[in-house]
Length: 220
Image (cartoon, rainbow, N blue to C red):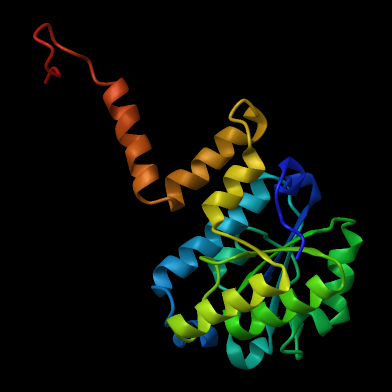
């Protein structure tokens, strides 16, 4: 297996394309590898991060009439964008999705979805075999059990996939806080979706803006 290392192996927003797969009510009802609230939060944060960095994002569902529409937390990030609805379980067998990805001209393919062991693993493994540089965002994905999710991750790693969490991916896209054109917008995503890190930042801002009295205590 070719090792994934070196600066060139890191993800770049200008080379990335994101595919969000089957973040739907039916799948969420049997999500047991993650807290459902955390999975929705991570998927939403991933979508918002992609928008901050102008990363093309394809959103796809499977038989939405029965499985339900994509979570509004995601579709609200891309108002007016068509959700590609499929019958194929394996997204990478649907030419509409593949053609949309290829049309971006990008080769760093980032995937997240429900469930990891089915709707994420199949397209990831197929795309890897076709020469794509595939990254799976694990916390924006989830399986029917902890075992199902973890075995799927192991299977995709064995096939050559890169795995990350949404916050690690966002940091890799940002790379340098001097990139002010995205830093402020990304910070807003962190405030809304990074839990303790966002709260700590707000607390820091509060402390910086709190007047200090002559004894060193905060003035009332």
